[in-house]
Length: 88
View: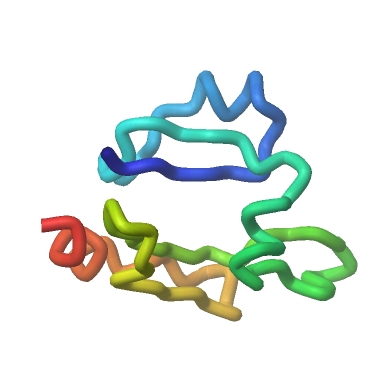
Protein backbone atom coordinates (compact mmCIF):
# COMPACT_ATOMS: atom_id res chain seq x y z
CA UNK A 1 0.00 0.00 0.00
CA UNK A 2 1.28 3.48 -0.82
CA UNK A 3 0.57 6.41 1.52
CA UNK A 4 1.01 10.12 1.01
CA UNK A 5 0.97 12.92 3.56
CA UNK A 6 0.14 16.57 3.24
CA UNK A 7 0.22 19.36 5.80
CA UNK A 8 -3.25 20.60 4.97
CA UNK A 9 -6.10 20.26 7.44
CA UNK A 10 -7.53 16.72 7.63
CA UNK A 11 -10.81 17.66 5.91
CA UNK A 12 -8.94 19.16 2.95
CA UNK A 13 -6.51 16.26 2.74
CA UNK A 14 -9.33 13.71 2.68
CA UNK A 15 -11.03 15.53 -0.21
CA UNK A 16 -7.84 15.83 -2.25
CA UNK A 17 -7.06 13.14 -4.80
CA UNK A 18 -3.38 12.31 -4.98
CA UNK A 19 -2.49 13.97 -8.29
CA UNK A 20 0.43 11.72 -9.19
CA UNK A 21 -1.65 8.57 -8.76
CA UNK A 22 1.03 6.84 -6.66
CA UNK A 23 -0.69 6.85 -3.28
CA UNK A 24 -3.60 4.66 -2.28
CA UNK A 25 -4.32 6.84 0.76
CA UNK A 26 -3.52 10.48 1.57
CA UNK A 27 -3.09 11.35 5.25
CA UNK A 28 -2.89 14.71 7.02
CA UNK A 29 0.35 15.76 8.71
CA UNK A 30 -1.27 18.96 9.93
CA UNK A 31 0.89 19.12 13.07
CA UNK A 32 3.98 18.34 10.97
CA UNK A 33 5.02 15.43 13.18
CA UNK A 34 5.95 13.23 10.21
CA UNK A 35 7.74 16.07 8.42
CA UNK A 36 9.74 16.85 11.55
CA UNK A 37 10.57 13.17 12.13
CA UNK A 38 11.97 12.84 8.62
CA UNK A 39 13.78 16.20 8.83
CA UNK A 40 11.98 17.71 5.84
CA UNK A 41 10.77 21.04 7.27
CA UNK A 42 12.09 24.38 6.06
CA UNK A 43 13.36 26.54 8.92
CA UNK A 44 11.98 29.47 6.94
CA UNK A 45 10.45 29.55 3.46
CA UNK A 46 9.76 33.08 2.29
CA UNK A 47 8.81 34.04 5.84
CA UNK A 48 6.61 30.98 6.42
CA UNK A 49 7.46 28.61 9.26
CA UNK A 50 6.68 24.89 9.36
CA UNK A 51 6.47 24.32 5.61
CA UNK A 52 7.32 20.79 4.50
CA UNK A 53 9.79 20.21 1.71
CA UNK A 54 8.78 18.21 -1.34
CA UNK A 55 9.98 14.78 -0.31
CA UNK A 56 9.45 11.11 -0.98
CA UNK A 57 10.25 8.04 1.08
CA UNK A 58 9.64 4.40 0.26
CA UNK A 59 9.56 2.22 3.35
CA UNK A 60 9.34 -1.55 3.07
CA UNK A 61 7.24 -3.91 5.19
CA UNK A 62 10.10 -4.22 7.70
CA UNK A 63 10.23 -0.45 8.24
CA UNK A 64 13.44 0.02 6.25
CA UNK A 65 13.68 3.16 4.11
CA UNK A 66 14.53 1.84 0.65
CA UNK A 67 14.28 5.17 -1.19
CA UNK A 68 14.43 8.77 -0.04
CA UNK A 69 14.45 12.12 -1.75
CA UNK A 70 14.03 15.67 -0.50
CA UNK A 71 14.50 18.95 -2.32
CA UNK A 72 15.40 22.32 -0.87
CA UNK A 73 13.86 23.92 -3.98
CA UNK A 74 10.06 24.08 -3.50
CA UNK A 75 9.58 24.07 -7.29
CA UNK A 76 11.19 20.63 -7.71
CA UNK A 77 8.76 17.72 -7.73
CA UNK A 78 9.89 14.30 -6.56
CA UNK A 79 11.17 11.90 -9.21
CA UNK A 80 8.00 9.87 -9.74
CA UNK A 81 9.72 7.36 -12.02
CA UNK A 82 12.29 6.61 -9.32
CA UNK A 83 9.51 6.25 -6.73
CA UNK A 84 7.59 3.85 -8.99
CA UNK A 85 10.77 1.83 -9.54
CA UNK A 86 11.36 1.65 -5.78
CA UNK A 87 7.77 0.47 -5.25
CA UNK A 88 8.03 -2.25 -7.91
